[in-house]
Image 1 (cartoon, rainbow, N blue to C red):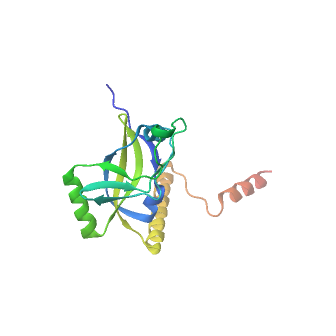
Image 2: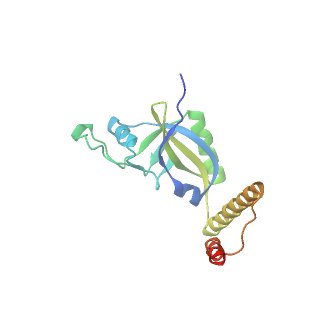
Image 3: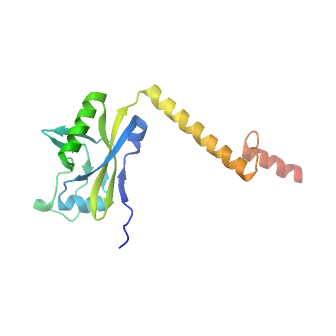
Length: 176
């Protein structure tokens, strides 16, 4: 039987911008039935979420899972409740030590549907200052430009100087 690749339900793009990712771990999550149905429909927001340890257990706070439209009364759930994360005690202890020692935080990067179960991809991350974010953006843009240039050299085309669309229109005018 072939394993399916995990389906991303929600992603926290803001986390990669606001934090420097040190390590990534995957954890299970305790959910109610209506929450699972709502998650499968993609009705979740994890932008403001974070994880922390309380009495030896890992909890996820700030996740908004919309109420499932067909659940009423007893079958319904509270959208902003705390949700327990499923990790081994030893993993929790190591994460807690690292968070305290290196002044790191745990932020969710994404929620996945993997083998019929909902998983949370957590990042052990260090917060970035505004200057650090600008520097990270500049580095990312320079790497992208270097990859583009390498691709151009492989294809054998040289980059044109100036605005590309303007140079093409000037070439068309001279051909007439």
